[in-house]
Length: 527
Image (cartoon, rainbow, N blue to C red; front, side):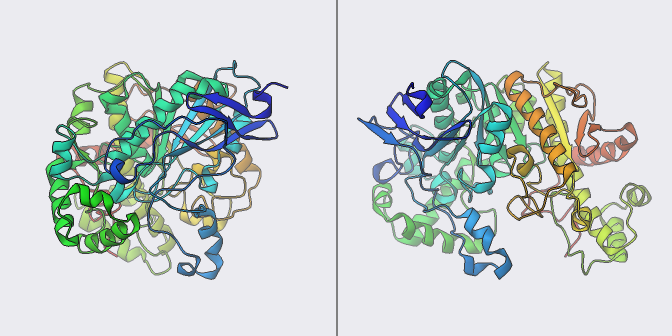
């Protein structure tokens, strides 16, 4: 047998020994950069060192430092969620990736799918059960890669001293990590049977912000060919980068609060001690106001939307969309139709009757679902705006709205929430009740939908076009509201629904509504 048949490959740093599972060869815990600890803390990632002999790649490595979920923090019936979310450990030494390859030989040149996990860029990892690459790789002959990257404080801390040290930039280390992982994949994926010229980077929620930034960053030119942005458009989306000076100011205030006089001293402090201090520091700031991504002048030279408007972005094929009920806005058990109508009259006084027609509700449960649908319809317009920009420039964009619901009454009541596409994309059978981690017994329609959505994603990875086989036609974005609705009866969005999107679009043109998960007040009712 060849070395590849025994799940042994040679990468630039040395030999790796993975393991086989059915038709797959699996490699876990591969370092794509040097550990960002000590003097490498708050620096751009450095190349991983070489090794001699054969390095075992059979277990996940540590996830990035973050708030660690303890089973005692959850109700008894949800302890399983904690177990699925928790890798074996969380460490500052976290820059690792994992590979699932169905290739029979290194010469196959299969398309490559790199997954950037969600979690608001403060939580999550590439070793969560729901983004295990097995179900996608084995069914669709795609090489799947999942990555870890620095999060929160360690991923985005900025300070004037760091800016001077790095020649005029600091912060955004998480994005540099993503770039380093993509570069490692480009340089090494051929050894796993992958094609370095057919790489798609996909991300969901916080990971979608990452892929959106990779789309515009000049530092990504020539590394990958496509991006998939799931529930996190830059336009009118979850977050926008702040100016570096604002993050640097936070950095100065944090250092003063913990009594640290220099970056050299900060690099000597214990990582978990710093994390705990940061948790206390950010508490009075409010959610979303701690260290986050910024216009650093290098990875992000200007505001992302300005760069897109001016045509300054990478020539990547783009798949982008979101779910029909992303945000659970109110409690369906206590909400009433009267409260819902009062909300419509307050927020949409110029269009109340149309809003009632477009978003009808006969009881509190339906009204709660409609509030979520309204916020989510505003979110999808971020994908529409990007589609318009790419169509203007002759680029490829495919926009989706997922309305597939669980085949239960609870699923029909809640709709298609944030993360709903993930179990189907990754083929995590019997997951996806309320979110991708909870158990849900799949029926035939779920298996059919998995086959559909995996086919779309796999063909996009292979060709930059999701169409193929006997799947319903998915039009490239060319005219307003060219949106493919992913559901049990997948189709291009009907023109009868365009009026409500035109209304939201006109409102968004007039004033930018803050529809981040931290500031939903303009599109959702007061709780």
